[in-house]
Amino acid sequence: MATVTELKAVLKDTLEKRGVLGHVRARIRAEVFNALDDESEPPPPLSHENLLINELIREYLEFNKYKYTASVLIADLFYMGF
Image (tube, rainbow, N blue to C red):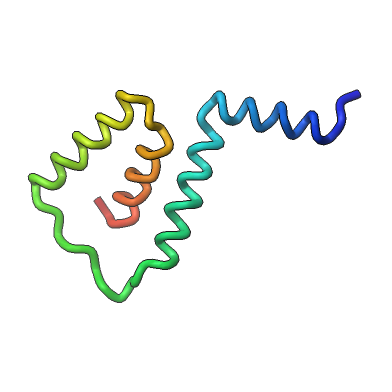
């Protein structure tokens, strides 16, 4: 019978291989920054050029398998309402 420690290790490995653990970590990180962010100041309006740049950065991150970084960017953009 497997120990609790072994089960935790297998679960962690499985979640990491599926990319879920990194996504959860990135989401928690983004939420911590959101909680610390000054909500009284609205985000600046996003120009079409910046929207295009953000999309290019997201594509670059995903193409190069920077899943965690991309998920933080996506969470941040989602929080800002874009």
